[in-house]
Image (cartoon, rainbow over all chains, first blue to last red; front, side, top):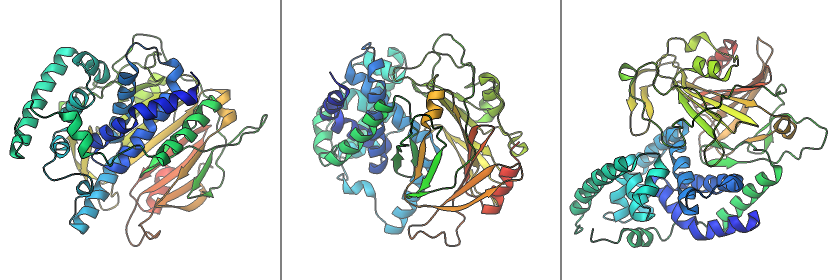
Length: 166
Length: 293
């Protein structure tokens, strides 16, 4: 299939879910847009080299997760977050409010730390198996299981506080 | 779990979609990259990702083009192809797989996060590795790069190499120069250090080094664009003879007010591009450039 058609197919099939995952991960819409955009650009650059050792979806999610991680580790992420915090303080407003209700499940996930958020999103939102998650984050399956259990326990507490039956 | 997580999240975030505008931007950039066959640099500043088109004509050797909000900056010295050492071996736990959380220096052995780059790229073609020492990066790549005494005895460096192993390599070193910043604390979740600003250095200085590894990349060149709250401040020749461009961050009104905002000094030395970035005065940034030898 020509590269242009592959790009269209990837964006149509996975675009919304990738963007939403980046938003949950980065907790910032603008950064999520950048991460999603970079994900598809990288995917197209390397599509020919994709060896189909994993499913296309797992491969794309792995690229997205790495894009998010790279953003989180860079200093301008910190600066952007600081700027955001300053703006919030000025406006006494939370920009996530624009997207989410106070007691939403998405907001509960955003209260988790980055590692917990990651494994919860991959398992529950992206429907990846433990085996696939292990491939995405470069950990052994046992480690993923442990991390998933821990993250689930923490999420349970947050959801119950928000009035959800878990 | 009683909640259908996926459906719930999709419902809650239904207004977040990959819009036609975004798709169009991606198409433009993804397709142009593939046609070029050589990576063009993606520069991420604030919230902008820009890939420029050099319009390279056959037979012409393109220089780097920097621009700020459409204003093309003065030319820097030319780059050249450099050779780096990328040993063959087993894949390492690259940053692209998962960042190992670097503990605070007191808890971190000298060898932590360091090791040999291997020639095995990940699934999307990039070889990446974290380091905590700029000199170690140079040793491993087998090249000599500019350095400054101001970065000596610094346990808080966070270095990183990214290369496709054929056309380009990019080295980044966060907290390269600490100045009078202090009270560094490692934030494990974010894999970075928090610090307190000093009187002169409102932030530490980071260093980015870009290397061209192939004639093809050299002939193609690359464009950079700073978009949004940036302005071109000055171009000058340093004491060592480097042509330096200074770009500074601005406030929303395009001015800098009285605030000491981030400055970037970009120059090419011995065919290698260096960018120093941090919240210091223009004079301090120029002074730092003078120490790069």
